[in-house]
Image (tube, rainbow, N blue to C red):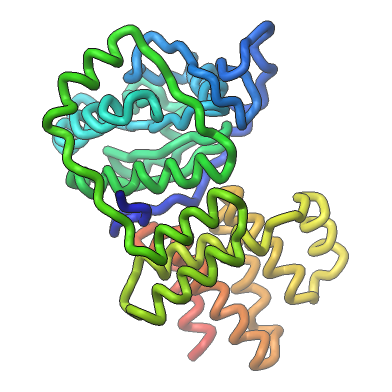
Length: 324
């Protein structure tokens, strides 16, 4: 199988759904049920692996995402690309046998979710993992590229302990119906597989080393470039608390290390433009070495967000203007 995001997809840029996330656990919910903490792995009974997501019920899907990743398909009846993509999403969610649940959100009747996911065009596809939304891609991608994105979502979910499985009354029959036509999984290149295994066990330095070896072997390996950027971000934030990072940056506004770290935190939490603006505002005040560090960090964060993300080109243009 493949574990890297294809062109047109990224696994960062989470949006703020805090107004929907701040919910109490469901009273009496069993382990693995909606409302359980991340890391619960028991089977979760659901009416179907393919559900309608609405402004009214999305809190329940956020609860479900604490155990099972939820793929969110923002679509509309009048959208022709949506009619191409949605069947692909439904097919793959069924093939994965409960490792995902698909929530289909009609943007015409669910304005709150449409705004929360910042859907600038449709179809837009996102995921929710452990209550945290993650932007994936916009537009109708081919099935093989969507499958690659799903593999990356599973990786990210594993990093956060979201490894449960949803069970639906019709899931087994549906899986049997598509099993014969499911393509064989593609083997990861060796260094990518070692990096993935290291990420799963939380050994980010080992994953970084594997991605660097992959790039030494093939400098044009864009998947390794993106993977390295993401793991570097995770490693820099590992073991640090939100309060520790933010209080450190507030206490030392001229400390470049502190500001770089809080930019990492902003981006990992979905405040992408805040992260970019923080570093670009700081740039003119730095000496040559500091400016180079910011330039390198910006380029890395662009990879984390995804080079095709609409927030990247304006930030890249602003960085270029500052450089020259």
